[in-house]
Image (cartoon, rainbow, N blue to C red; front, side):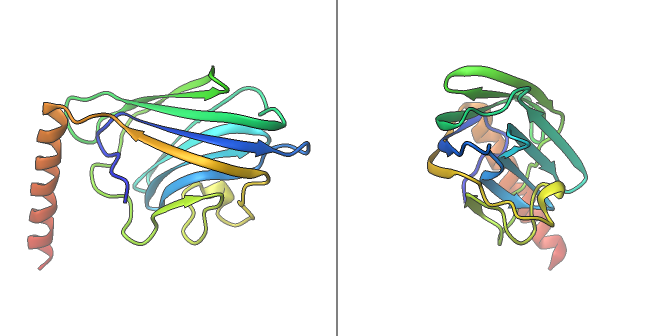
Length: 175
């Protein structure tokens, strides 16, 4: 499981978009109860953040992805200052900034234990409600995906320790 909680991170992928346009999931992590997805809908690149199945945030481009090979990138800049804070999301296509938006709240616990990282589709408990009941396999080809997580800081180390403590307390309460 890739731990991106309470951290700045980036997701990059090289994709081949067919002449008919891009549709479907490039990469996703989590489930309908919480997670994120980088995908294409109506030809446009989108990033969807699902906060516990309660709040949904979408950042999207205004123009369609070009046909052929492109590199897409999402940069998630965490606000810091505690767990579950917000973030700014920026989208790039071939190095050009093409979209920006806000995520007001983020998950402070793991997204899911049984719905992990998926490349090229999002089966079972889909993260994005709009594509949960239809085909969401990427219409082109995902050549590679790279996820880069910011180096730990003193604050992120303290947040990790706080998360471990809260998780332990939750397990004790449930016992």
